[in-house]
Length: 356
Ligand SMILES: NC(=O)c1ccc[n+]([C@@H]2O[C@H](COP(=O)([O-])OP(=O)(O)OC[C@H]3O[C@@H](n4cnc5c(N)ncnc54)[C@H](O)[C@@H]3O)[C@@H](O)[C@H]2O)c1
Image (cartoon, rainbow, N blue to C red):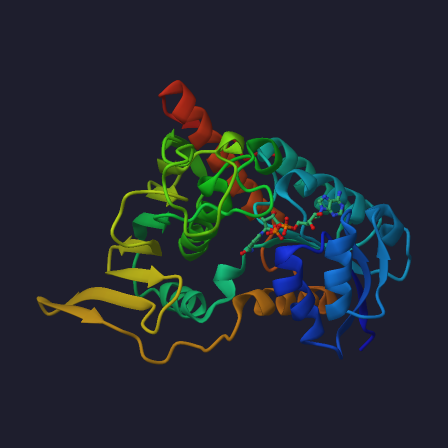
């Protein structure tokens, strides 16, 4: 097997914690040829992990290298679209971090570029590669839950505003907890529901807690005057097949417990799927008029869903398979968030547009 030559665009937190270790975990299948970041310090730190890689501050240098087969785009959200489209047009496969884009308009352009190039565009939504997600997907596909007609998705932090990067800057990120962490639990939920087509959404956002400098934050100090995103968002999304999902997402909220989980309501059974923990799944069912609460005990072990995500990307490139997390899924999520943010402004249910 010819080793893939890979470039990393944006060598900050997620690149060093996940993308680079992911590629390094399969040295027989790929090698990191280029590292790109506009900050020399970020490049230096990444070079410690991938010594020998070429470095540049301009991603076009690595796209011009005909040996490069694939790239990871791990820059802030505002810098997802251009490198992704340029890479696809240069004939490279792309693993782009979540959310796919700032909004649906960007996401559509990225999906079009992927289609025209015939290359893989994978969105960095790793939750579906975890053991709980794999088990649940098989369980649902085997018909054990019947039709899933409702889900309650929650990504709720009590005092968890990210103090690094640009996560509190709407101009750079496109939004706050909804687009940053809601994206993960919404993707898991929709993946398990078979990605039904969304039609409309109603949402509400708040920012009072996030802007309040008197409140403690467990994720480090941040400049409250620069907090331009919501601290919490809630919404109801309706789907063409009659299903609905409610989503709650917060960086800050006065709650007892932090949740990262989704609850699926099916016609045959229900399930609670948690993002972590020793018992990540509970299943609720009825047989012969008796009600059962079950905890599966043979969930596949996945040490790191992040590493698994990168391995799946490399595998798909090598085998010519379809994208393990297609750009179209990222577009659906961006379109849902656009509608929720718009609805928070208008106070009305907003239509969701995913055509591209
Ligand atoms: N999948 C996940 O669980 C997960 C977790 C964290 C972050 N993310 C996503 O990863 C992305 C980056 O987040 P992060 O936490 O690594 O942020 P970060 O700020 O630590 O890293 C981003 C890096 O991109 C660099 N950069 C900015 N513009 C650039 C450009 N034009 N060319 C090259 N490099 C550029 C920055 O200098 C920085 O080093 C975001 O989209 C975020 O949503 C995903």
